[in-house]
Image 1 (cartoon, rainbow, N blue to C red):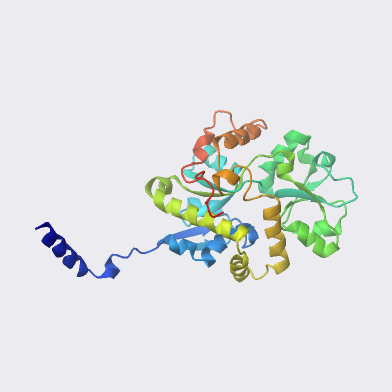
Image 2 (cartoon, rainbow, N blue to C red):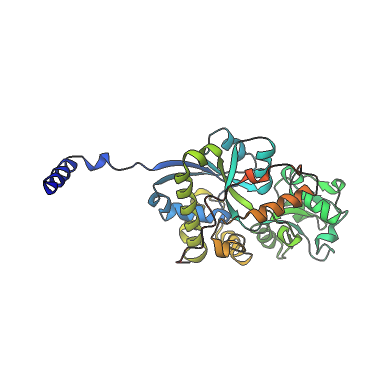
Length: 331
């Protein structure tokens, strides 16, 4: 009797068209905080290799830039996920009671830096006290406060920063903010000299960077989707860093034709040499690793500058639900 029942069930299932059982890929809009470049190589690798498709995701990457506020696009619901540039923005979500949180830390080390000209006595952070420094409006409200507290800088040193190297290239005493993965190469191309690079992590700054953020609602109602996106992106990063970056380079070039091969290779090399993506906790817990201890240290570090009230619930800025599951065996 049971055998007959199984045969009957099998026969009825055979009559159901296969197309009706196939699951459509979940659409995801993902915003970058800048234009396509190697700093997003893992995501473009995941697109190029079809890793998102294998995870049942249809991911569209939207580029950012100086005129694009991805945080606003995320909060307005026009993006499902975004690259939140630094841990400050995550804490600001909490401070301003905005229901969004970080689900992964793309960079274990912040690539922000200050660059100066060689031979000017600007070889260390302490040397810059009292000297004009050009930084962006966002930086003035974030890691500039850390440098002020640690090295005694003052706001009187601040100069406007217009996302251009022209002032630097025309003034031997110019000091400005930069990214270790790009501006040093561009300066060398233009002048034949490498600038002095003062990387923020070397000053003891302990914040994560290039974090992935999404809404509290997404985390609560679609945790499987979040997990698939994070896992596929992490694999994209491993493949980009340790297998073949060429698929990502091609995708980046297609999205941003201004990106040269030389700049891509330099940025890629800096990501690896400096351990920006894969260092520290990520070496054992996997790319995107975050820990409560490190978030606490960053919060205390910035709380000491007066930037955040010590009673702020900083733990609500992030969740460890989707990270710290260990390094993939094949890597």
